[in-house]
Image (cartoon, rainbow, N blue to C red; front, side, top):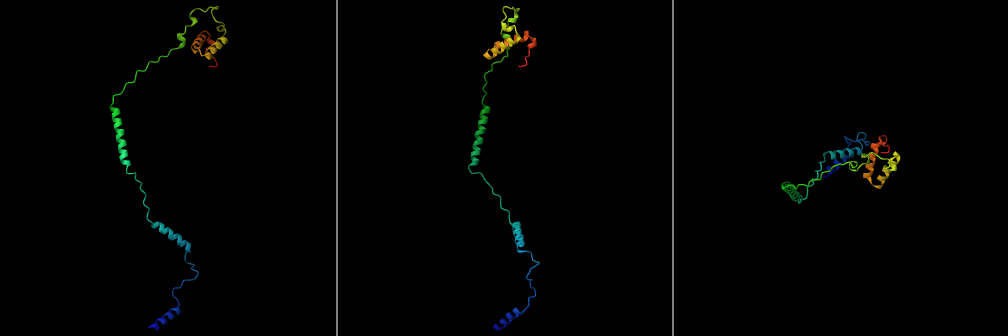
Length: 160
């Protein structure tokens, strides 16, 4: 039988293949395209990676529960305690300083008793400004009120 095997091998060598591929392979896609298609196919059938689940530490639940209980007891005790009454606030009254300062206009003005700066409107305004600059605002406001009463034309000065 050894002879028949040799004959068969020689027959196969002489035989012309029925389905022979052409050497240029013009109907086959390029090898790079095959690699791209195969890679996309592998990605399409690849199972999804499970999402990572983060869990809190084991000690966080008891700490949160204890903090909640402490806060609840604080609120309950605060609500159950009688409220302290605040001391009464003093009343605030508004007074016009010019009402308290005696005005020399109550008596008929005498020329001899009137200061020199009151005879002229500009010097009177300068005296009022001097009083304000010196810090004597009560007297300055009283003088300004008297000035407005006597000098209606100068009641609203442009610099105020």
